[in-house]
Length: 403
Image (tube, rainbow, N blue to C red; front, side, top):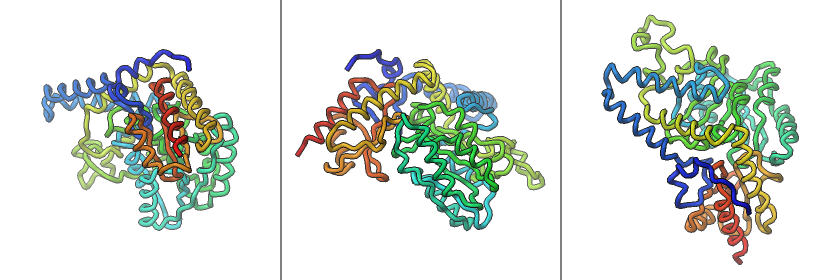
């Protein structure tokens, strides 16, 4: 296996110096400069005074700079970006503000994260809504047949849509199989539906990994986090919200950041909330994390364009998939090389997936197990190198050779 130049970013990540890491889909390692940016921001706030007239302009500039940075990546205006803590809150806060009527239907894919599914179930119970399932779990063609995947997705969508469908929930990259969904194609079809269903997209596995501009600009709710593929700090994410949602939705969890200003909450004021996406921001949050996320995004850009980074990711995931596909006793979830850095696979005749994760962890190799479908998942990023991939391959080969 030929040696390639190690990305500069890898050398800046302490977490990658003592292990073989494949859990970017759960949480990405934080680069040292990002940690330092967070610390510098903490110090700045303390110097200004954590609650003084001098600190508020600094906080406002940090928030706006981050919204503008994220808006540029998403291809939208900063007024459509709300800062959140994570993907789940980014999905749920605007979701619960949408106008629903008794008997409306929610169409949820069978590959959504439990946090989003449980929120939709509770919403349906409270609002007397019905839930339908969009079948996508069996769309496993891989990267080389994305057109086939899109066609099958649209066919399944057509079967599942009902006259009273009000919302469609679909991830950009399925967190369990790794298959990529065509959000723009789904959005186009929904625009012709008589009920004009809203489109909520879980972008946990896409932001920081693949170009998201087209999908983020087409979805009504496009929620993502900075702590996975963007390698930012945990506790900070965002959601891109369509103009339609801003016009028709109401805030849900409400705090002082939801308001135009403190005086706007007077009882005789009919519109106390921000008219833009900030109405879905709540209250006090950790300001220094903003500098950390912007630093991580800047470091990613220094590694190359979005397409160049994705090419590197696909080269690595394809390499791993090809080896796994040739191993007797190992079954990749996708029938072709993955369209992302997620490589999910099964080893049916061996110990439980949870036990396999523990065994690999003892050797300093970190992947994760999933429950639906029951499988193992390895995530490869631009910081993944040949040595790591080779070690993982050998570890899996060793597992399948044990009688």
